Image (cartoon, rainbow, N blue to C red; front, side, top):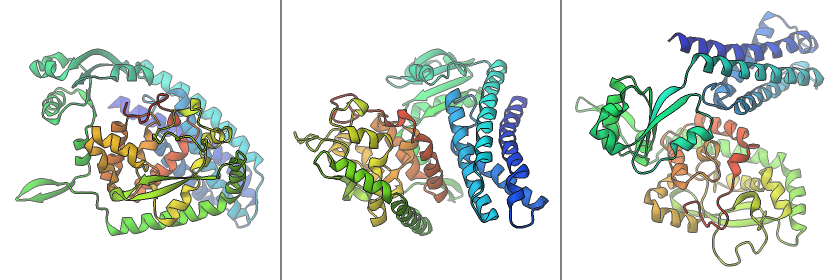
Length: 445
């Protein structure tokens, strides 16, 4: 309990220090240039707005998860959070000053915030792992598991001391195998077996991390109610309320419309650059959206015209895919190739947020191995989504399905906004666009 309080206090210290840097800039420079009279109330409102915005963005970008993120990830996430907050407040200050205030003081404070962030991250992680030894952990799996390598790959060896790995049948025969463990990872275990282990772990104060199955994710969206004087969980097909549908469509129209206007110069320059190799600027490809409806997604062409001359649908293998043109490589790196999809969103083919639209041929291959893959077609396809924010390009189709179903199970405007903000975080993260194995037609192989 004491440890949790100190951790929260140190996280609060980060928000206070970053806000203090902004406050100094506001109080000693920008507030003196506001045309209206400033006082304690004005100072409190402006500084308080920055504090709240930065705190919310830290949560959206997981910027304060000391024990679960690498140092580079923490600094990157915090920098993005206070950059967005700084820009937002600069706009507010521009309104208050009725002009364009000098940007140099703001940039100076931004670099000071980076220094504060770096100092906080190194100190916080050092103190956390000094006083928090790695937890004795075990992995329990159904058939195969890669949890051991994942713990190493993501730098969690300081948090989890993996001491054992068991097949679920071994544990069911003797639950005492996990006696004395502090953490247990459950990977791909059927609910009948998992529930036995969960009850044992809860009774013995063992923390459990469950990598869910499709049924678990569907159940997460269940509505709690009471019938027959009993607690009941009601599960049904994706059916968001009309208010959400209306607001989501309004959000799509406004955002895509503004996006098309703002990015129109980029559209013109990119179209000219792409056409230099003699092919068309745009590329149309058949995709699937809600209830399996087909539509043609628009993109700037980034591959050779004859990229699929053999008629076989293939996913990109990333930077080493020789089908990608030189211009295509650049616009893919900057995500510019996706911009024409704003037209699809404005027309109603897609939404800003939703499961990414898949090609019918590739979806059919996935469904042959995973019939439940079609469940992701309950919602309209999106430009960005849960799987794009929290997965990678080469995340397995099954794991992407789980993430898409997590989104579908709990639809809300707040979640849509959170995913939109989180999308900014991955724009410059290479892992999010890694290619699959070369020559592979789908990620299922």
